[in-house]
Image (cartoon, rainbow, N blue to C red):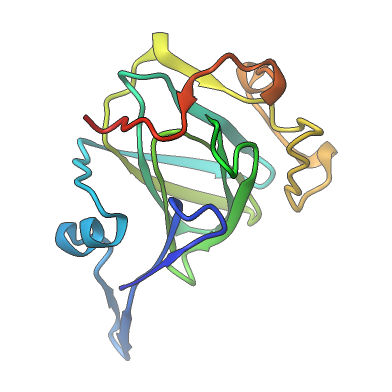
Length: 191
């Protein structure tokens, strides 16, 4: 596996080695020791989730408040998505900046999004099966988000707005400037 720090260095793109022949392929999608060596701390994933969505479905930008904050390790099993992580740690030198990665069944890339970042993806293919590990259980009372079209973020979703499909909840999220302090840079949210 190759672990590549992104523009937001805490966000890591993971490129697994794929071994293929006439029978098909084999890929190791997760290995705890190599993963922790790359991120620099222990992450204990406790839940796996999967969604199936059609083209234009945009899920996010989501995060959970402490003490139920979540890290995510995301990948695509079928189809293709644009994955997005936004730094929402007040005081961070990259506060309000984001990274994107194209994740697909073909490239088998994964993205690690640590606590203190909002996460979203939009489906670029006809359909996509999106799978992810989280290191904390879903806590509805601590579930928060940012609106996808915040002009201060200016995220290019790679699809026209009229093709985007969002939940009612995701359409009504606040802008980054309206967000109360949820995470602070330099605070360890893993203890």
